[in-house]
Image (cartoon, rainbow, N blue to C red; front, side):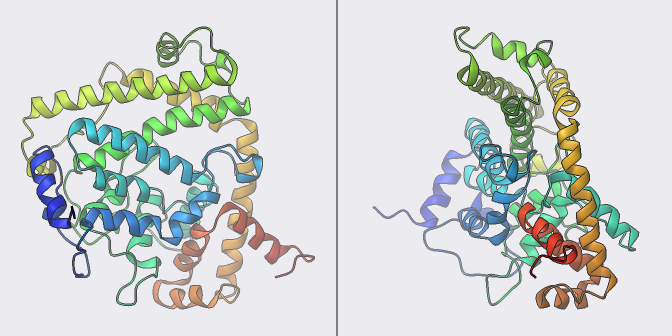
Length: 389
């Protein structure tokens, strides 16, 4: 039996919740294209993201630990895959569009710089110092990558993603994000509340940060179990774990239960809000004034306490701060070197972009697209007299 795109759209109408986004009702793409016979709009979006250069580069972009510190620590790419897995679990439980959620999750970090949030802060500061009030924000950069910087098609710039995936860049919100600047997207283009699919990915991103960064912190011994003993979430997870497990198996069980606790709470609390608000359509979701897909008020303080402990013990650990300081110095040096001589030290494609978008923005685009490893190599090529260029 052949299952066509039209068959899938009919199945969505029958099986998805009334407040879910349907691929057959998409607001469409910036550039008109014929529909695919077998794949829905959001399945095509997912595939375009997976095959993009920006997606592949995430393999060598920092989550917490720089790549050379170990092969087993998470990168932007593995974090992204974990967010996609958690997002789909949430979407399935709430009757949301899993294909859209997967595309949103896989795309959500493609605008990240090398060296994590340090790189983002450096580029934001440098662009503002060079007269660009929009600065740099990784979600807005993700939309820029999707709309303009990826070049894979002869008829248009970017990936030509559907509106419902593009809004995920601008309306994605976690404790680690600041709102995308107004320049992201056309004026008023995303002037509404995010779909529940976008909200599910934002929530999954938080859960992945809390749980998997903690896992890496424990594995690296920058965080010890005794540092967590007084945390409510850690204690609650411990009550679910077989006390006979210790070492690596015990840590894996604890992290697994941390995720289970947060996902189960979030799904139950979100379902209760959906019912209380009487959300019977996507239009009702768009008009909602408060987030719908979120943890319960009872769990929220415990999640914040875990985030604060991670900030204290992991993100501000002296080893992490040392690498961040080094990254800041050489990213700034590369940027200023590119801007100082009119862009002559950048590749031809980047110089062409500078003629259209301005040299500081083109230099930021080039730096943001680099992996950790490539940024280190470029620094050596520019400043090490014994390095070949």
